[in-house]
Length: 64
Image 1 (spheres, rainbow, N blue to C red):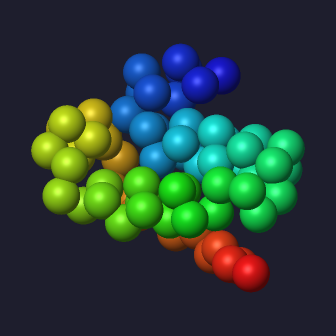
Image 2: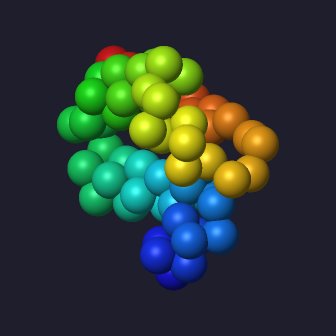
């Protein structure tokens, strides 16, 4: 499924699947790291080049 999403230019959807998986498996443990990763995506030229669908990743993180 992830490969299909990436190959069709839906890297944002593939990434959200991975983020949701991590958040489900490790609640609260990686919130800061995920937030940092998402915060750096706009300036990441390689990531931007992979995006074939114009959309943004929005994640609401509850940090304790």
